[in-house]
Amino acid sequence: MDEVVLRDAEVVDGAGGPSYRADVVVSGGRITSIVQEAAAAGCQRPSARRELDVEGLVLAPGFVDMHAHSDLALLRDPEHTAKLAQGVTLEVIGQDGLSYAPVDDRTLEEVRRAITGWNGYGEDIDFTWRSVGGYLDRLDHGFDGEGIAVNAAYLVPQGTVRMLALGWEDRRPTPQELDHMRRLVADGLREGAVGMSSGLTYTPGMYAEDAELTALCRVVAEHGGYYCPHHRSYGAGALQAYEEMIALTREAGCALHLAHATMNFGVNEGRAPDLLALLDDALAAGADITLDTYPYTPGCTTLVALLPGWAGEGGPEAILARLEDDDTAARVRHELEVVGADGCHGVPVAWDTVEISGVADPALASYVGRTVQESADARGEDPWVTARRLLVEDRLGSTILQHVGHEENVRAIMRHRVHTGGSDGILRGAKPHPRAYGTFPHYLGRYVRELGVLSLEECVAHLTSRPAARLRLPDRGLVREGYRADLVLFDPATVAAGSTYEAPRTPPAGIPYVLVDGRFAVEDGRRTDVLAGRAVRRAP
Image (spheres, rainbow, N blue to C red):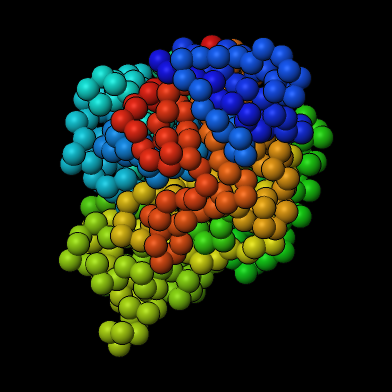
């Protein structure tokens, strides 16, 4: 373990109070001493085997990404600079109801295909696990037993659980199937998961009715976890979707964390105050609610996610068969472009807002960086023809940006007292959303320093202690003696996201040091060979 004294740090401790100058000693993976204003007081300054002068830099707890899609990236890429370079030391994965545990052989293959657009198919991964505990053990083992780049907490994915019990069928579960799902969720929580996620615009999780979700949330509550839904709409019906999640978790007695809590599309422009009033009323009535957002206006998902839910019944091969049938494809088109499919959040799709950000087949790279409308215009064809062809030829593997957000909503929601940060970063694709590589420095550079939407102390609390409290991690999220030394040092005058829509993988500026478990994973702005991350299991 590294032993170091961080000399003359400007400590923003994560609690939200004023910063202070201190010498901070790290040893054995923990913060062992904090001596405030040591030089000014003329007292004995702490020493260690290594001393690092960090005057002018802010020392804060490592950032917690409350909504990450690094489920395979953590096992594929030991560098993982996408997150480490931002100062992230803990990610919450297993999001949106679809991930790789618990599974059996059949569902593992189906999940790998279903979320190729998020994580790739995983040809380079040895899928040796089937249980949540097995997956967490695999994260612990990391690369040749040395661990992974950052720490990771896991949510039991409700859609995958439903897949195990019902397959891809759009129906209510039998009592036996519901009991099966309850056991799967309970097993995952006992094995260390911190809660349960849903993707209620993604098949097959979206087929669950409220009674089913409430039953599973009761299991989550019994084990002290939280429910993290990607709810049924972020467009038309968004407020009703938020109300649904609040009501069912209140009935279940379960804590609620609202994933990427946005108000998107034209129908919601300027309506963030309505959402915040709904939250305030629920909080005043005793609800346990937190939320996360990313500081950008476009969203990001897969192209196939836009399709109506009925088109996804039966899984990927059934979807492709429907798209290849002209009559069925015409019905899909009508729901997308006229009605507003549930996959489009009840809003008719505007193809000039749907930008292709990545493809699974390199032969289709010419689509990337263009909207569907632009590609259609270049080919002299209708945009649905373009979208349908890409879905089929890329075997549902294409990812998209959706330019449907509103800046005033983004700013209003990030100010709320239960807000936390979540990148929702999809790392694959030629032109991924810049949030994957820039969320946390963008908060600090754009929304703290440039716009003053949040104070520095407020913002750091949003990104550290608040998520640690939601995750029930008693020794993370604050700069305190005895706490784990997951830390970031940044220059408040220069910290900024480097990622843009044109160059989304450009690293951030102004973050020279990141420590994971007390070891320097980033030093002088460069990635070291340290692999100190592990699976973070739910506290009993």
